Length: 259
Image 1: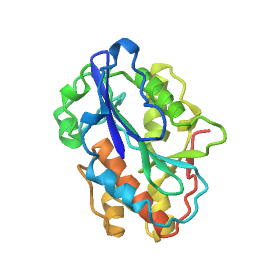
Image 2 (image 1 turned 45 degrees about the vertical axis):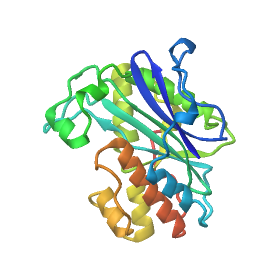
Image 3 (image 1 turned 180 degrees about the vertical axis):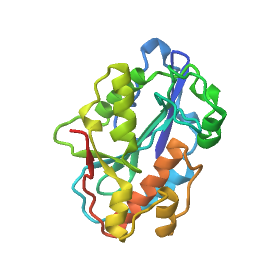
Image 4 (image 1 turned 180 degrees about the horizontal axis):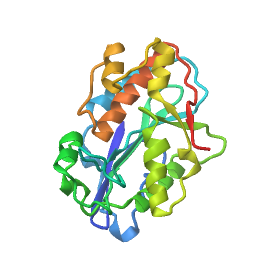
């Protein structure tokens, strides 16, 4: 059963999912800021999580990674390029490398600092409203929260081979390094290698997905989940494509690096 926990800290809510029996909860709340909640009142998991867990019973081609970490940022934007762009949604899905089951989810919105007010274009594109980022953690805080989540899920163990999966190279080649450079922050090593799902799809299917997720979803006869350019929904669709390619026998390999 997948459990849902709401951690409340410094006036914001960070939504985290956890598979029962997989260890302690994650996040980085202090003792005085954790709301005392009972899991008996936790709602049922979303249908897409249930479907993913059901599909994990199928056989998949052996992979070289223990975990796939699906990531898709959303950032401040306008019709003309905003500089610097700032991450405003930070979702990660942890998929087991053998079963392709979603075992854990990290998700939070992020408070932009240089351009704190979202543009109407940004809200229309991403579905992220001003109230969804106001009072949320800034990127330095989120990076610490991600590191805690990685540790709590055993992803920092040097014996565990995990890799991020993105729809393109922009997230980890351009967006995160660029914002970290502006803030004078180091980029954690685990963000320095990834699988570009577009390239993996082209290797597996023989044609490059020019318009990204919609092309791959249609090409694999999958159903689109949620809203395009919602970070968490895009992650769900990336996970579906990843799972279907694995089911068809494709072996995933690293395609990008900033080392």
